[in-house]
Image (cartoon, rainbow, N blue to C red):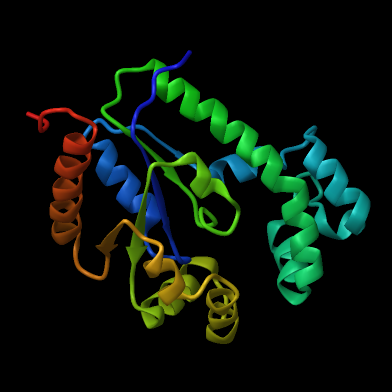
Length: 209
């Protein structure tokens, strides 16, 4: 039987800085797995999920090299909630299975605790895999600006993407811990260090040297 270690679920709205926070924890020797990375893995060429997507939508969602055209698929599912639910029914079980494999590997290692980073932690049922929920929080206006800049979309589309996600207030209400990520890098590092001390204590471990 694999040992149990503390698993922290890290979530937040789009462009809240989840990966940046995870990298900050990694500097405290904390391993992490990102559900977005796993989501990309399960739709690689040769994967059953990509075959199902291609069967449903045809070549309009495939690039010339046979890989998934993410923007084309995103346009479809954001325009039709029924299509979004279908896509989730195909991808979420496969993502969950791979996440469980990663978490099992963390339990075999020397980690003080581990992170499961996921934008859909609460919506997809992945919160059932974690012991605590850490919400990365930023003002909605900052989310919109970051999304428009990062994803090369206009402000209206960025607002639509943010609006399609779980409301900020609902997400915060389900948090065990909240990290405000509207400051500079030094502020973020200090907040992560505080949380690292808290999580090590919860795991029954001494503070990091």
